Length: 244
Ligand code: PGA
Image (cartoon, rainbow, N blue to C red; front, side, top):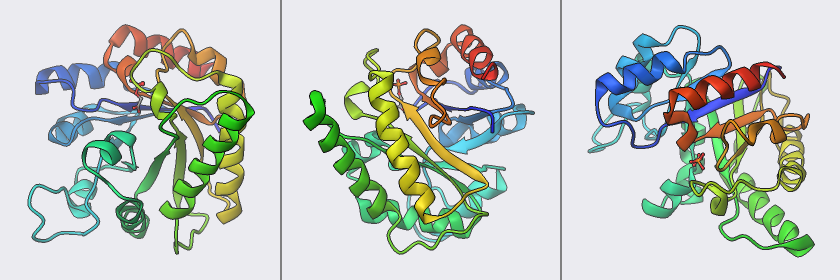
């Protein structure tokens, strides 16, 4: 399987015109482009090769849920993946493991792929730090997948995103992340053998450091935030990812 690049635009850009421009620059085969909900339609119409992803979903197909985006709406826009459990939603919107679990169940029932984000909040060094991070991500993964019976047609990627490495221009040490990613991947594959799935790294990935992460076999791809907003960076990232 080729390496995957998930572009998470977060609450950017400001205008539709800019979103369409960015979508054109991001239209590569193994990309999953995740614009904010307001641009899903225009970005979805622009993409020809990349898949369309949503940054969020509500767990009901439709109904009285003010301000939420339903599963049916996402499906009608051609969305194929949903990011669930991102640390910014856990932090600013108090998303709980229980809510994340409900969203994953709903996505899979509706044949939407899931990109589940997990990661420890604080940076702790050494072996003790590694053990504690492993324990935290295991708990997050198990709670997220609680009582979900997966089958091989389900599509799930686990994105390991150490929270302290997000948005600050200081990615984790690739070798350290690879250890945790290998562990998460094994855990995921103990639930099922997905046709499309695996484990990703996220946290300050850019065109300069991506080369250090992708050589690891266990790293099936990357989740890119800030660097996915610059056309020049995207081009370089796509070239590098395509060479693996
Ligand atoms: P970043 O964001 O690349 O800006 O660190 C990654 C993420 O939050 O998914």
